[in-house]
Length: 194
Ligand SMILES: CC(C)(COP(=O)(O)OP(=O)(O)OC[C@H]1O[C@@H](n2cnc3c(N)ncnc32)[C@H](O)[C@@H]1OP(=O)(O)O)[C@@H](O)C(=O)NCCC(=O)NCCS
Image 1 (cartoon, helix red, strand yellow):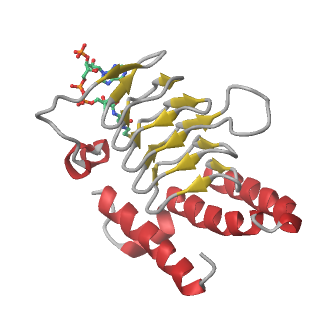
Image 2: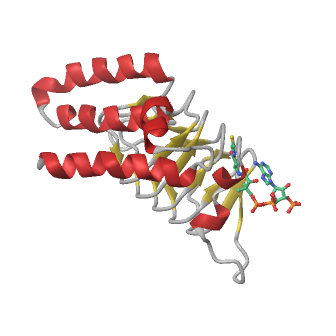
Image 3: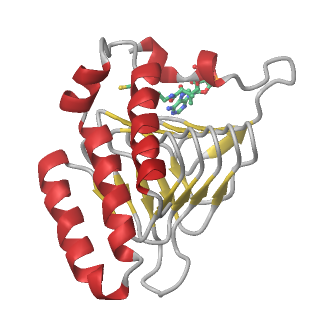
């Protein structure tokens, strides 16, 4: 993503994704000005570019902590986030250093992609494309969340979740989606009910 035009196109995609995902959003201007989740993702994209330059790692960390103070959303600049991530409401979201997030993911407020150990190396989740993580859900450790999975509000996930599955409860148990009801992000995204 070294091309500035490509970078700007990515930021525009983030804006469009928030508008598309939130029926309460009335214009792109409103989303650009009033959505802390969008601000957090945009500033993460800048901080992540800084993070890739070894001498800029401390400034990148300080920048992301400054953004956390403004938005209530903490994204480590070392995390790897895909395209069109939408963080709805935002407050209390935490994304750890070695987390990886696919494309078209929705995270609600209070959700955590966190670690379970103090060891260095991969210790945070890998989240596939089209996953929805409900409010207050915690996904802990280097677990894998398959494409199109949904994590229920307040679930605590400590094991892998298969593609298209629904995980609810503490600790989370898996409920496979009926074969007759394949995942459809436009229908199943709980954000459409808000
Ligand atoms: C998990 C979720 C995606 C399931 O939605 P769904 O497919 O429509 O499932 P249902 O509501 O039919 O519930 C299915 C079962 O899971 C249970 N369940 C649903 N959500 C749950 C949750 N968060 N925690 C525990 N159990 C839950 C239901 O009680 C039901 O149990 P049963 O089969 O024993 O009766 C949804 O309930 C959810 O939590 N979405 C997150 C939404 C969110 O965070 N919104 C924030 C808006 S600000």
